[in-house]
Image 1 (cartoon, rainbow, N blue to C red):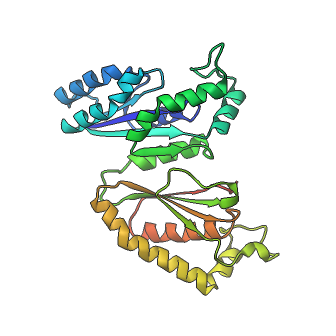
Image 2 (image 1 turned 60 degrees about the horizontal axis):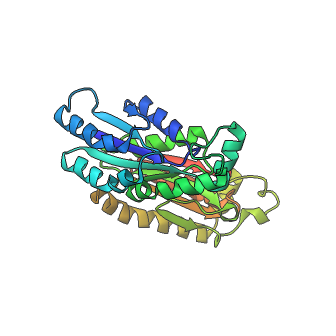
Image 3 (image 1 turned 90 degrees about the vertical axis):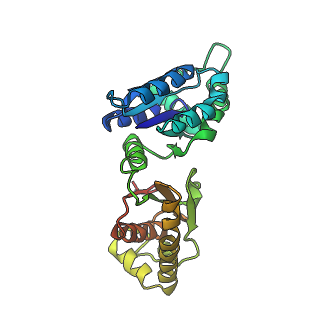
Length: 285
């Protein structure tokens, strides 16, 4: 029996995530008052075969602060009753949230006559701190579209009973900012840069000439082999510890060449080892 508690900032993609869970076969309840969660858990425990074996509950900032402060206790109680309870928190940076509200012309649920959008977002972050601290799954949608968000939700939850950990690989450019909520960040800026080769500059790490250029470098091969060795040694430890997913970010200066190349090299390695792998190249169109 599984229970997903879904929360996050307004405008971050909670509705998309909840709809994705519904598509995955979860019975979804949106905006459930948190004081009713204990009754829901009790009902799920008493009637495990009532058609609600996979249930998802959406919680927003309108829940009382006192109820939010008791969330960790409610989660522990659910797990003590044999329910696989996970908390998923969806977030995005403030500028992105403000832009989304401006584009959609939607009203933030916490805005009022004397509270601006910026103030409402800050208040919401403060109110949801308790849920954020309980979250095992955090997804930052600052640079993520709705299709990628759906893939991320599926990657975190589908096949999580498999002994093999699921892996999200993400390439990025340091000059565009470091991704948040990742388990590992690797820096490829010490490797030879195809950007300085006139014929390679307009290409990416997905193109054969760039791959051949980087494959020819002993430093690149050493970095690739060291990363493979590191993960081959330590991923089984994470699996033994019960981890179902890992997020690995690989960066270079612009996120076009070296990070993309290394991400694809690791994708091939992990897939050969039988892992479920999801790849995102953040800076590529």
